[in-house]
Length: 195
Image 1 (cartoon, rainbow, N blue to C red):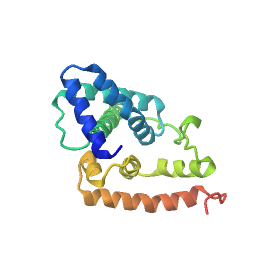
Image 2 (cartoon, rainbow, N blue to C red):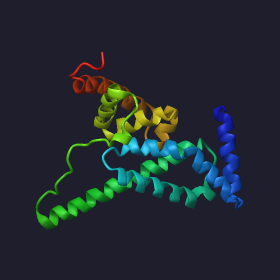
Image 3 (cartoon, one colour):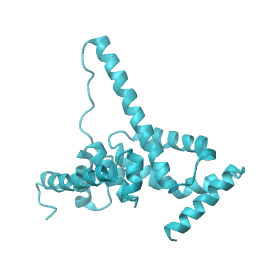
């Protein structure tokens, strides 16, 4: 199915949902749940419980806002933008809470140990996939996000809308991400798996 057909189908499903057809929403959910979960799972690499919470909160927000959705772009870009914004809001709240705790205790809170992936989260590409996944985890959030959104076949223009920045900024982040990935892969792959 071509993207234009998917977009038309998305628009028809959204219109049907707004008219009261709950099955239309179930179809949208079924169509995008794996993509959204995969994006969030790779964005929030060190906290599977938070991935689940952000995933659920994203779909609740979509339900709430869907009647006001204007079909100006792809539904998937809108969906990822909502998930990303929820995640960023949670980071800000956590920082504010940590700052308040720091003021109360006059001591910085302990940060969790190094990021690690659960076995079921690892790429199914064997050892090479493990090296790549570790490298992606180490990218700065904005770069990791651009890289992951490109993996979901979103255009740079859509990623710019999601991140709230210019296309040039997104292109720069992608360029830095690729350079960083090359360096990180070689750094992680001291055993010589990747040649």
